[in-house]
Image 1: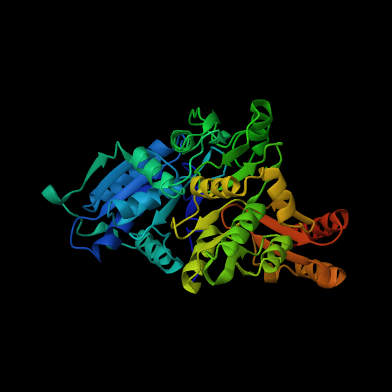
Image 2: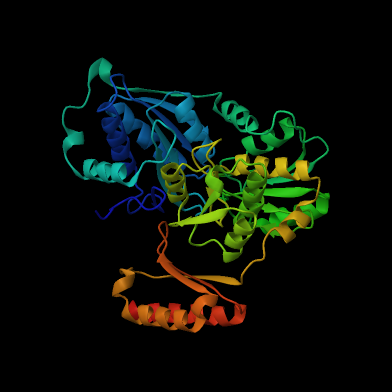
Length: 452
């Protein structure tokens, strides 16, 4: 069944236009509460959190109104990371968790992500059922009245609850005493909680990207712009930098020399450590088709194996759960430690890395340099006004086949539409970076001919 509103990570778009309007948010509030009422006997409890975008006020109010109009009870957390809402949903025994965020997108966009009572993102089938409710007329008949109308309240202690949860994932016998850390919150959802997590564990913290004004989320700071964190690490003589994205569900780390350490290298470090300590279930790491071939080889050389899945942290989580596994992630920095959290959590991931660094007693630059031999990889994107199924784009298919033939067994090609933005993404791996970049441009040029 084709999905009308939901992409790979909820609903996302330009705020106050298209699918991201207060009217849509109101109907989502109605729909998730209606859906919850089918399985519980009490007024459904719905936790609503957001990042720091100006439009968050707009959607928070509309969603809460929809929940109340269907007789639900709203618990408002204010600005908090996406994984914090997943945690609060389970710890508060809520029936639904809602996050208002467009993650790494620029400030004019916003989005809505949904969690079930177990703290996991809703599966595709439930999102499709919600779409049917949103477009149908069942939400407009027999709404509660009088004393059965819902109510809303604020969870003033929500940040503290989340900080305590994250700290509990760090080994109890360890501390961060003597470690200097730059924390870059991207002027986003973790601007309060991220510095607290590390400082309360004993680190000396220099915080940047912690002055949100509603419009500066992801602007020049955070995981999308780790150069700001890198500069601060070098200037402060820090041991490492932690750069989060707007909703703090992913992390990019900077070593003590100011070099970026991406999700693939972090997964290699963590997976090989878990293998060595016999804590990687079934000796298997889950990564997406975007992860570098060097990661696969590093895990295999340590005695494990890599299982690939579709792009999107939700698909990493689904694969982990279906296969009974414990750890996986994405090159972009979504790392999922299923023994600790139900979704990607940049702060949890950073603490797991810090525990490894403390145990190994070596700087991050040394560990990252030796952990994997990266195969040259290029990723090019192009934005188009319209999208078509890839199998109907004949010039593009011909170009892909030509590149695959030239690469043979020495590389691979992946072409896909983004699940959250109107972009065509072309990823190519091979032995010569200049050559594979030219191949990627050839494929994008063919796509442009197809979509004229």
